[in-house]
Image 1 (cartoon, helix red, strand yellow):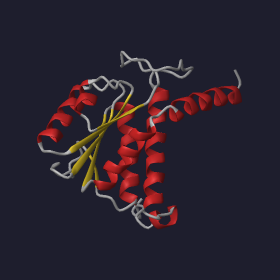
Image 2: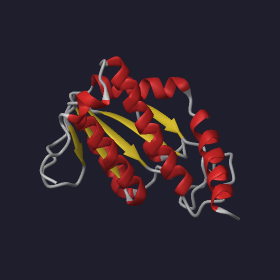
Image 3: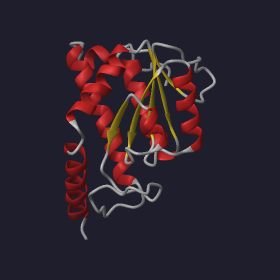
Image 4: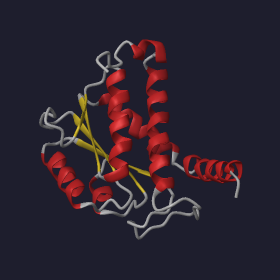
Length: 186
């Protein structure tokens, strides 16, 4: 296959997964982020990379955000929100983070393939991305040409970028106003 053929297939897959996200779940996700005193972000592997990008964008918006496991991350407490990215929803460390957040009366949001997972059963909102992953029993409703969990990981990243856009609209922010918080010691 040529590059453009691959690109078109990948874009079709993304169109399918992103437009299949439940509108109410997306709205609830954005509401929880907007209402949180602080947002804590966690994920493992490539999902961890995606959620770190979300934490960065929240910081650009002036929202207190942290990546779980970093040395400068404070403790979660009531009023906080834990955002978990996990295809399976069963990653042991992320299950433990979820249980701790609930113990502290914080809210939990999960972006996952598996709405029946352990983390999803504890979450205040479940955003289901219908994509295949070798780590999830539930495989979504699309067959991907991409390797392993790539479609899920891309979809969760784009979903979080769309959530940022929804927050920007609510807060009447632009990329220009956000850029004022961009790192200046690069």
